[in-house]
Length: 500
Image (cartoon, rainbow, N blue to C red; front, top):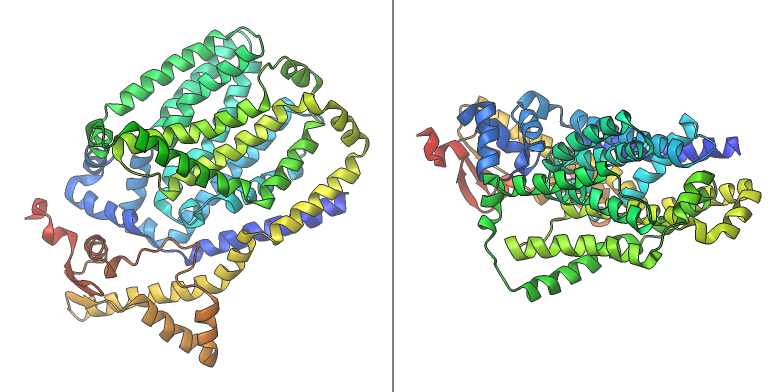
């Protein structure tokens, strides 16, 4: 069994190493380019105030994002930024597994097994999210979405410690949870929604088991209400939502939200790897501590109600976004909603473990066989997944993509060195064909036909060749005028009255 876990670990961490390696073929995109200009106009503190007043109310993530994006030195090490974000996210998942393992299961997981499970969890997330590029390969969303989601997992551990503690220690954990709630609520709107809903969901679950509601959970629920009210009044959020003016009928919003909820859930329920992971949770439920299992046997609501609550969380959020802003949730936000829903599904399986007590006894009697079968099935599902196929393709595509963008930057530097303030930007596809021909010779047509350009894992919007994006790309690179596929565009500073 030990040898098998090492073989599986080698496979899983090979995947993670390849994912990490792709970080070094990514480049800044869209919002990443804004920080240097805003810092030049307002200073760093003023840029943060401008963002929170004019753009959004993400008072936790915006200072971090602008501190990074306002530094060309940091953006010049873009691959290391992405790798650092990925390592932090994995570390949070690892500590989540360790903490939950100590609180709920016996025997205690070793560090190696916790790392193995953390790798599995992260790979399941990568399989089910709708847009991998904005999940791990775009710095703006790494700071705004991925890291807050990772810290949310640690918040659930803090709630677990709170419920297990007594006396003054319970109030200490309440303070920790309260501070974390305020900080995570300022990261993005999805976090605001789920973090502030969490004490209510926990409270309802406790009451459903016929247990008295801890006063600390009630206090955290009250704090969540205050946080939501405060965040909604921030100027940036009011401007972003058009001052909360209704844009369409509630029926239209509900119909659209129902469709989008179904689309979101399809990302999860069409993934074979998700079902295999659920099998792993069923096997893990056989190792629940006796006191935990006894506590959960008092639960009164049915599992279908719990699943419906998960879907309702997505639906209600989508209704609000449509009703207030007349917008749909972008893939970068759906990414973490999908991940939260997956975690919720795993939790529901554990909550209902008492219903499969006979199966649990059978699993314990055949635990070695079941563990071997699970590891084998997981590896087969992973290597045959759509994510694995896209990963292999990106290993070929990403270096070619990076060569195109490096050549683009080299062309700009050459023109600037020659004293030219007007730079012609070649089209991406023509550059792809030229560089592929140089790199692969007469095989370049096969490469371009079989491998999509730009790569699916790269968050690429081709800014200099798009009218609505070229101005901040030109400003970042210090070019007065860009001539791209859609025309001639001046840099941000030349069309902004604040610099005149």
